[in-house]
Image 1 (cartoon, rainbow, N blue to C red):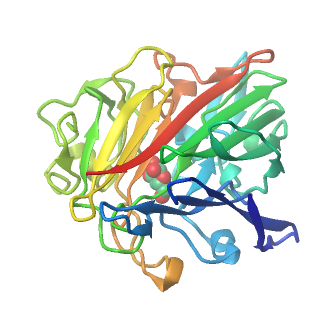
Image 2 (tube, rainbow, N blue to C red; image 1 turned 90 degrees about the vertical axis):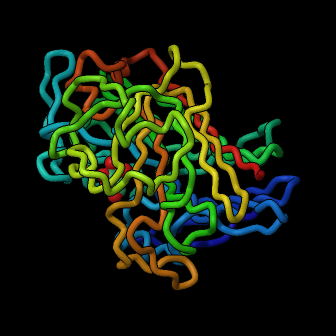
Length: 350
Ligand code: GLA
């Protein structure tokens, strides 16, 4: 695995980029700053490779300001309402970094820390193992949380992400990956023409601050129904209260599945290039975010401007605000238990 210096963080830590390759010519470049997937080269139907994830050319740009481009997100991906939760008789106060709520682990989440790199042997392909010890009290969360994330690029054109964590006190964990994809190539226009299928009959509707109300609501007859492949842009401007709250799609779908089986959650197709991406996960939920906050201020790789909806995210996860919603699948992790989760982004063409 090739390793090159990417730069230094503000406190002087050296950060590297690691390159994973597979037999088909795919290439993933990952940095141990935030566990960020910096680039992902994927072939189209003619065998032409382009980079399908949004990001920056330099470490300093990631450090200065990034809307979670390609990052590992934790300790709690998505929102915790009113920046607090109760667990094992204690109330924990977190930083409110998204209106009244906590988003993506707080002010300095796992997307902004330097991860350690561990050697790993995998039969499935080139792998990179990243570890991080999140100290008891970091960002307000209880328990020393020891986290391991393994990225593997397989010869079947899959980017596989295996997450593991253990704790020494009861805590909550919800880890995810935040790549912004554009299957026509990063910076090559908006994603409104991509056809999206999500295997979910329900979603968790939200209030105006994007915190779930607690209901599971059927998607049938609404712009949230992606049970048949539909262009992302086809209904995004409809007069719908949820779409107004999200300024587009920014919701958690309840995947049609039992327990923690690894199952197809979503498929996206881009007709002009023929690129197809499938998402498989062991998680019960999927946040589909249509890049609503991109506005051209982020100058991406190769100097390309990322305008409104130039990328979409499919963040596999437990449901938002689960620590305060006891009817949702639990995100609690106790000492002696191991948190485990797997997500695969599989690429093909048609
Ligand atoms: C997630 C959130 C969005 C937004 C993006 C990053 O998808 O749900 O509201 O914060 O991350 O901008």
